[in-house]
Structures are given as C-alpha cells and as structure tokens.
Image 1 (cartoon, one colour):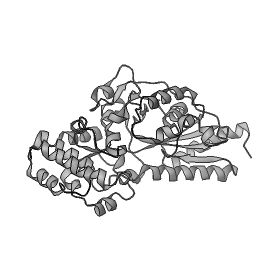
Image 2 (spheres, rainbow, N blue to C red):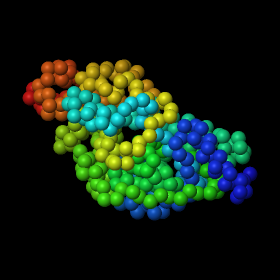
Image 3 (tube, one colour):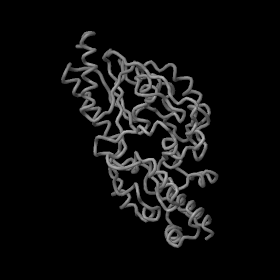
Image 4 (cartoon, rainbow, N blue to C red):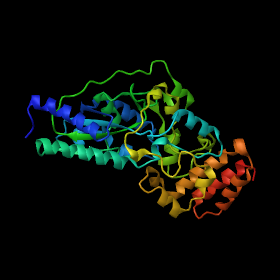
Length: 361
C-alpha cells in the first residue's frame, strides 16, 4: 500500500539516511519528466556525435521517458557515490605529472578500482530492499549506466548538481569525481529542487580538451573524445587523433583536471575504488607486456575488462608511439613494440606499425 503524504515525507528522509549508511554521499529525489532534454538528445543523435554507440540511438526518445521504460514510474531516487581512492595526496598534481611522463600509462582514475556498475547496483538494490522492508511491496527498478535512461538530466533535476560545459555533472561540494545511479519507483515521493549552474565564464574544459571534443558549452562530439576512442571505439583509432591521445590508454580525465570545482573533489568511503594492480603508476612498456591471460586476471572485476586484450594493446601501442615525442627510439619501447609486430590481430599490428614509424623504426 502506498504511504500517505506525511508518511511519504518521512520515507524520503529515511531513504536519504539509509543511502548514506550504504556509502552514498548524497541521495535526492526527482520527478521523471525529462521533456526538456529531448530536443538536445535528438540534435546530438542527428549530428552523429554518438559515433559507434548505437545503443544511444536504439531506444530513441525512450531515454527521456523513464515512465515508458518502466511503466508506473513517477519518481527517481538518484544517488551519488564519490570514487577518488581513499588514500593519496593531491590527485590532480599527480595526474598532471603522469601525463608529462612519456613512458607512463595513464588510466582514468575511476577505472583503477572495482567496476562501479557492480558496486552501485549492489548498494542501490540494498537501498530498494530496505524501502520494501519498511513499506511492503512497491514497484521499482535499479539502474547504473545500464539502461536507456538519461541519468545526468535526472540527477540535475534532483539537485545533485548541474551539467558542466563538459557535459559532466558538477557539484559545489564534490566537483565531478563521482558516479550516479538511480532507482525508478512508483512512489509519489516529495521531490528535491534543482540547483543552478556555476560554471560562469570559465571555459577551461573546452580550451584544454586535447582533441577539442567539446564543441561548446554542453556540446560534446564523442567521436573525438579520448574516453570514446579508448573504450567505446572497436576499430582503428583515426590517424589524425592518435597523436592527441598522448599516453592516455583508458579513458581521459583532462576536463576534470582542468575544472576549478574539482578542488572540492571528495575521497571515496568504500574500499572498492582503491587502486588495484598499481594502475596509477604503471608504465606503458609494463602493461604492454601483459598477455591475454594476465590481462583477464588482473582486470577481473574491473571496468577495463570490457574492452578486451586486443583493444588494450591497441591503446597501449598508440601511447608507446606517442612516447617518441620525449623518448624517440628508446630501446625498451622499440623492443616492446617489435615483440608485438607480428601479433595475430590486424588491429594490433596496424597500431604497432604506426608506433614504430613514430620512433623512426
């Protein structure tokens, strides 16, 4: 039975408290009317800015209509979970230094620990079950970047933050280094207020994007984004973009490093996002030496596993080729590349050949 109005207000307060107990930094509630986001989604898809991410187009405007995806939905419980590893100093200074080291392998900070899909989904499911223990059966469905739902507009509507010029969600209290997940429910819970934007005249993220993937405030061409190129793109990385990728081998944090609001970035409270396998300090040569069995073993439970060993080598070959800018002809790098020159994968061979050419070999 759906609780009465006063009970719903108390339930909303309880949900937020239970969420914090489960490791979420903030929990808010929004209605599910995303009509305001449909025009932007249509324009983005029509321009082809989603690239090979066909799943972005396959559900059409259903992405902006949660009640069509899950009939009966009237509210979204949206939760934020911070992911910076619990230990560490000035993370932005560390990442900036890594990017300047041509032999370093740069993995996006969020991907160095456990797969966030599993962590958030499990915690959100626990929160949904806690509600059921309190009120009995109700309709709900848990999502974490796992269904055709426009998560960021929902999170912004719930008041978790505002969409930055780089299109990521920004919080005055936590910058952008966090994950979000949702529980769509059929409970008419009281909603939270959206917050206003606070990017002002700052254009750091636009100006400093290595591939100029951010076309303007809130306009991202994913086909140029390093995260897309190293994660979503299945084939050959365009020649003109390879030099711009530098030593970033999985994802890219540049727009976050450039954002002034990330001086407020928060550390994770869960151990799940602590760094594994030394991925914050590994070299390109070291990771390029991983055979498929070692790659699968070391990336078990990691978001990196999804790209597979072939694309892992592709990305590393690009990084090793770009190392020529500071370490041209380095014997260790050239030897590592030559060891993969006859790899069974045409994709790997192509990128290795390009990298060797960069070193003048």
